[in-house]
Image 1 (tube, rainbow, N blue to C red):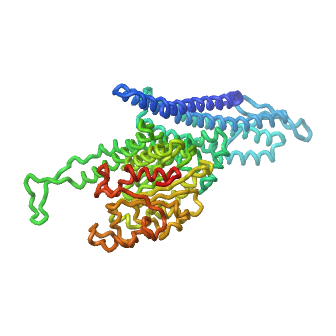
Image 2 (cartoon, rainbow, N blue to C red):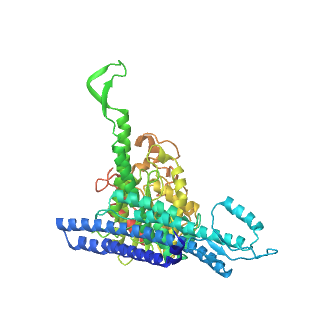
Image 3 (cartoon, helix red, strand yellow):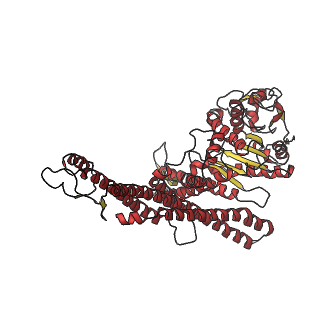
Length: 606
């Protein structure tokens, strides 16, 4: 970039353009909200039939378009502001150098050279003649020029050279900014179609990484969230940001914003939906690439291990194909889990409120935190912690349970708002006979759950009736969290199908005993858990008959026992299966026990 162009540049015009893109992104966000929360629910409530289903499907695709527009506009806004900031800095350096030149009565050429007049003493003759200094960016050349200035008879040479070097720096900085941001901005564009594909979201992820890297200097002015901050500190940090800083932070660090307990649920939801879409695109790309690696041979002849002979007309799957298929199913299951989250978060026609995605990542087993109803505006919030077997790929069942609780709470207490949260913010044990006999999974979950529960109180200003509800191994997670974090803003605890909650008595949970509720179905296999940690033997009722009258279970006293000292609500006896054909260990979300839990959640009693 030459000197004249840099002098004439108006960074404010780029900042105005950035503001325009942000406004467009805001409009897209508002359109998304209106589609998802007004138009689609209204159509589902008042209309039925294939035409309605088709229209809703198209509107949902349009919603994805708007979400994509919002994200890309945010990236363009940050890029334009970063470019303007770099050009403004270069322009300030140039203008300061020109002002210094004018103050010394030097001239500045169109090529950035600095002319200086004759000056100094020259015994027996005229003063040393005028000259011209040309800027350099080389450290070695600058050092030589500084040495030359000591010997040059014209005292103007040294200052002129220093000014010329500053002008060269300004022009170099402007040129670098132009060369960096021009291709970056050209890259921030969508395909010329109306469909937002997984490939588009993969590109968005790359765009975000590119802008984040190139705008590192510009983004450095923003105050980062407190390291290891609790919910209250996160909330105060967010409140202290300007509207533009908030928009920039969400645009550039959606995963970071989405994971911050204590900031508004609507903000976390918007950020995490972007993370979900980008992750879906990334995993779909992995699956597409992996499918191309399918081994040529799925089967091989079976060789008798005893005789070493090949059996005719008998084939088995090759080890290579099994490994390939295992990875294929894993990726497919992850995508299915993400699709289930997206589907469940849409407003239903059954009365459940819209979903807020308060946490999401694809790390390890995959994690998701979904609230049906806004916890920031709810009178009651129940946080459900699932147990053994919970993971991203099978998250739909746990999401359904949270939805059922939201609907039942509205039924038993229609005068108040209840938000029902499915908290899968930890890696749950995956096997009953192995993993679930160890406390390490709960030990690792205590801190993240405590921060989330604190965030529920911080986000609502403390004016909320908060309940934590654990199922199966999730009761141990909830119990350990309450046990080790006295002072959490939690009012009630509900434990269903519990192997023990990590304490001997209800009072050890730092809650009034009459606010600690438990239920275990008569035929729930959790009743067969041994009284001490260790490998579970085969589930033989006769082998454990002596434990049926001993209320000790895997992790402390049985919370339904008199010795525990809490409250108990009933579950229909039934048989080994619940009313709807579900196992007894899962029947707590059926009619009577669900209603009992909903009454507790809304501040009442079963």
